[in-house]
Picture: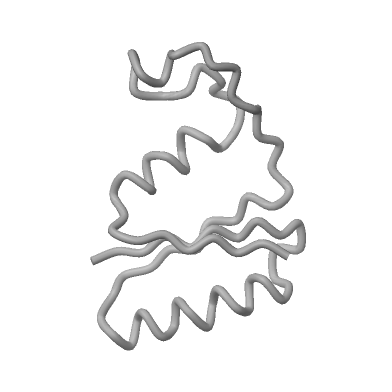
Length: 84
């Protein structure tokens, strides 16, 4: 089992990270694999409703973290989102 934890704070190692890290540590003690993904300072395009993701399986915008994050989420069994 794998859980992806998304850190939406612009402060990569701040309070939101600390809370996510505590959760990741507890998941680890329970035998669950975790990964913390930091997206807080990343510029991410908004959806334009073009349908490219439906037909091609990925976002038309390739210069941000959406496709990378989506691939990790597809492999995950759980998701935790942290935001300040």
